[in-house]
Image (cartoon, rainbow, N blue to C red; front, top):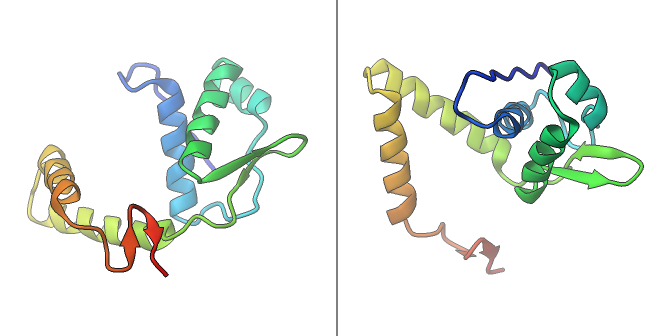
Length: 131
């Protein structure tokens, strides 16, 4: 897994790191149960503070994408829900937007608006299955 961060961007380094790992998980480049690099090693490799890596890992843990286990470190969660299926739909959406020369900002605005106003999927109430 290749992780790139750019200190010149306004996005915090921990968020860039989390985004790179999130993309690798969703795209299937890393799979459930696979260990992630140790925070100390990854920090040294990227040239950042270890706490930056830990903060990125904590964000991913809070999203349910990884588990932080004492003695094992960060491990990709084995049950990440529908994220893998969602990744395909997202890529299709981006491809379609690019085909129609829709700027990224407009696409993000459309997705945000749809997310706010679309009711939950059938059988789901506040993120909890009803069955």
